[in-house]
Amino acid sequence: MQTTNFSPLTMPRPIPLQRFRQPKKNIPQTLLQRTRILQAVRDYVAEHNPVPPLPQDQLKEHAARLMTSLNCDPVYRDYIGVLLNNEMWRESLAGVPFERRLLLLPKCLRVESKCPAPFDELGLLCKQCGLCSIQDLQLEAERLGYAVLVAEGSAVVMSLIQTGKIEAIVGVSCINVLERAFPYMEAAAIPGVAIPLLQDDCIDTTVDLEWVWDYIHLTADDKTRRLDLGALRDEVDRWFAPESLNQILGPAEGATEAIGREWLAREGKRWRPFLTVSAFQALNSKNDGLLPQDLRKIAVAVECFHKASLIHDDIEDNDAMRYGQKTLHEEHGVAVALNVGDLLIGEGYRLIGDARLSAEQKAAMLLVASEGQRQLCRGQGAELVWARNPAPLTSLEVLDIFRRKTAPAFEVALRLGALYAGIDSHEEVEEVLRIYSEALGIAYQIRDDLSDLGEQGQTNDIAGLRPSLLLAVAHERASEQAPREITTALWQRRLPAGIDSAAIESLYSNLKADERCRTLLETYKEEAIRSLRDLENPNLKGLLRRVIGKIFNDVEIKGWCKEHQAAHIEPERTPAAVAAAG
Image (cartoon, rainbow, N blue to C red):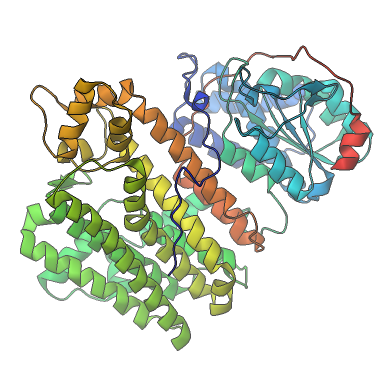
């Protein structure tokens, strides 16, 4: 299984650090609030079936009702209205060909102090400098066939609608501009969806890029676009209840199997079996939405491999806690834990062999699983060898460990799901799944490193003195003698006197190592999305894009920006010309 070693030096340009500026503190929205609102909007539209286009006053009435039922802060009324409008138009947008759509981007997404692009009467003339996200969004939309404008203003929108060449609009803007454009779209009955900006000022703003990519790629050819990923993940999670595991694995024989089942049933995100099922759903030629009984065996096998690796990893790292409970070797001893881990590996291969599949499918699955396990052991082995003679690692060396240690499990999960759908289906997408998994795995591990920060940190890399990307970046940036001595000691697995976790986190912050890691996280997330660019299967392309949003959906809606107008206008283009070019 050939792999590609992505690095920040060979990747597309990183996300600008402006993405992480703090918004007004009085307009935060947690992920829990956002998810709750979105689900409530979907339920509301499904129940009441409002028919677009709704007049603005009626849309606000619906939003006010939802806001009351959710007991939301009134500041979120307009945001709820945007979601309602989007949900009403979603299926209509999916039915409009790409070449009849307009992508409208705001000028304030640029890095204003460095942007070399001039303006004409219709907006920004992007110079493709790579400093902001405008370049990527514009190039991808135009590749699909969109007309694209980097501008704001209702007059421009109306002019383009009047050409008759635009039948749907995907807009990114602040609430004020979206509100003024709304009457024109309503009058023309043009399907339109909107993605609000994330900051409440008008310079160097940012947007949830996964949300934009989801909408610009939305197509009726994607039969999975209505698939409820939340419900699918809940369904997969239920397979790991004790009674379900007994049905899938058969009755437990003896104490070792009982301990293994209990470990499988413990808490966990279960992203890997979810990915297996998602890949099958996307490639299932029947498109009936049904999950075959034997698919459960393959999904549980994937989790068996993962949970076995966690048992062994905890022993190797001498970790005492996982999921807020004692690790298996702390609870039952190292010998028992090692044996249970080995048992789970065997269970994974047994489940694959026991599934009702062709001999060719089983052989391919076993090869994929064994290659993935070899890669994982190589990555873990590199870390263990380092631990025998610890010395500073570069950020590229840490990323390479992530690539070998974390990415293979995602690739195995996706490819087993594809193979369950069929050998031919798998062959068509194998290379894309490999590249996608590599970027996804690296991004996931970077996010795991970042989750260690703060009082509510989820992992214990700092306490365990293990190599992390944060430490690598901090060491590379520590030019003065004092912080350099601290980072060197940490690489040597020594905690300097008077230095605790809080002091280390403060050092990371002062050296902006956390900002750099967040930038790399966004870069690898975008690389995962870009890897799908040439994928011909619309179901898999759409679903894997949505999976990225599902796994990394940690962007908060943080407030709305005031309108910002550019002062320099150079007449060069007309709305009709822009639409024709699309």
